[in-house]
Length: 348
Image (cartoon, rainbow, N blue to C red; front, side, top):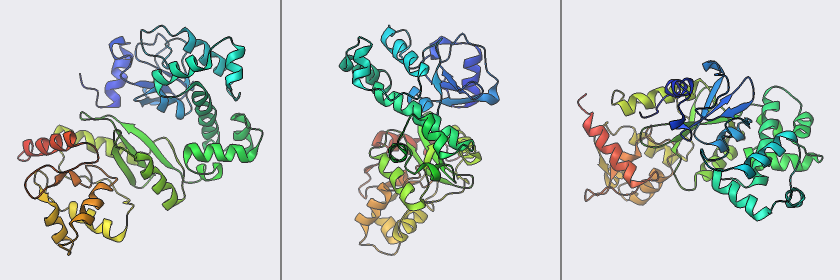
């Protein structure tokens, strides 16, 4: 069974199917806890669930690890050290942990760092920091004052809190509470994707394997002066629905409102990309001619590479003049899959 929708994830969750124990994670809004499928805890209502592809994403969204299913460790592995330290964090979520604190517990800091990094991509101190700042972000979104959020995060210094918060979310705490952009992960049959939206537009849609993705986040933050924080909007739901239809082969043109972030030339190229029909391709040189500058092949290729709205602005439909696939920021294997998929469903 390929997991494509939250409805399918909830069905797996309701069955307590441990065979999906590391496939996704669920954050429960009413308890602030995140779990793995198969957890023996009481089944939450579907409207109270938020689904994540990894523990790091759930943590950053402000959820804490369940003490029954231990979602921060790999399923089935011995994780006494992980369990002990997560318990320490939850007992003192505002504490700023150091290597000295780890040594006081009788543990080796390098072992702790290595095990945490291996299990879910964060060191122990990074885990603790994300937990504190995730709680602070939640407080701000609930209307709490910046000072209360600062205290929740365990910072005595306002400037240190602002810096840590800005480094994590890309904007000052006051900006995070006012018109943020929301980032959430969407599962597709090809690979996980992330979407950045507000209440009106989709700003970014990328495969999570894309290199230098942080560059795109930074560009959005600087261009719009808005924080990028975990969460979703009706636009997220809309693009998720359209992606499902696209991968099912029943959708050939996306209608989700977009907010492309590019130069005048890039926007011109991206507009021309959207004119390439579903299931067909064109060469970079043809695209250069389409934008009125046949010598601008390199600039066109660069604009393709900087397109932050994968699939929606179909840069995967541009190939080399000799018929080769050319490059693709999400990976050439995905480009081939997408072209084959569209040809297969062209007459559907």
